[in-house]
Image (tube, rainbow, N blue to C red; front, top):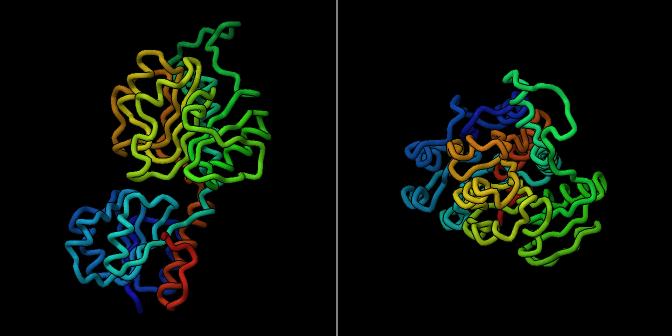
Amino acid sequence: MLRLLVTRPLPDAVMQAACARFEVVARASTLPLEAAELRAALRDFDLVLPTLGDLFSAQVFADVPQPRARLLANFGVGYNHIDVAAARAAGIAVTNTPGAVTDATADIALTLILMTARRAGEGERLVRAGQWQGWHPTQMLGLHVSGKKLGIIGMGRIGQAIARRCHYGFGMEVVFHNRSAIDPGLPARQVPLTEVMAADVVVVAVPGGPETHHLSGAAELALMAPHAIIVNIARGGIVDEAALIAALQAGRIACAGLDVYEQEPEVPGALRALENVTLLPHLGTAALEVRVAMGMMAVENLIACAEGRPLPNPVT
């Protein structure tokens, strides 16, 4: 029986499916693998089920020149924590879980759009602090999103799901920036990044990695309107956090909604101090049925590898 390392606690149904097929070693810690654990994962296990934060860098692969591991079946669609080229060079395949995360992540984007535009986080803090003095006509006025222009950076599955919700649900005009020309199958225009940044609501939904690091930096944020909001549900490093803080502090943009951060779980004190920012703890796929679906997809990839069949969800 092949030996499988599961790097974080997963839902019971996923663990039962894995244990039925493999000799499973499951870490109890919810923290990422440490340096020695990363190398042991490649050296001591046939298969590994890692997730966000388990940093399988090129150096990790270099330190284990003859790995036992044959597959990293990533729990999640994003895999910027794995050097895929280095894995391939070491003879290790990488898979992910596309599709399973799409709707849940799009829902969090809508949550952040509405919370941020309507100042819901600020309002809840006001109520909890016992400082609310009652309704009045100019209390906590925010941005009315219906009919506004939405700009999406990255029009993959998640970007398209966000676009559908915003266009058909709120009558928003949708523009998007994408690395390749696509037809999303809904009313939306592909435009340069400069036009996306000029929208009323900007949502970052592009994959993380070196190619998109600080894609929204100081120059791009300067293109945003003073009343506009930016939402990031992708990876923290896509938005230059220091530049975002500066823009928010100076009032150059109205507000931001964030589910991801550059150095998770660290959230800069300057961000936490701002009232015009909605901060969530990376809740994008945090629903039981979604996490079960992600885990089952990862297990399917593991079983396919064990049986010598084509991998259902290879990262290429």
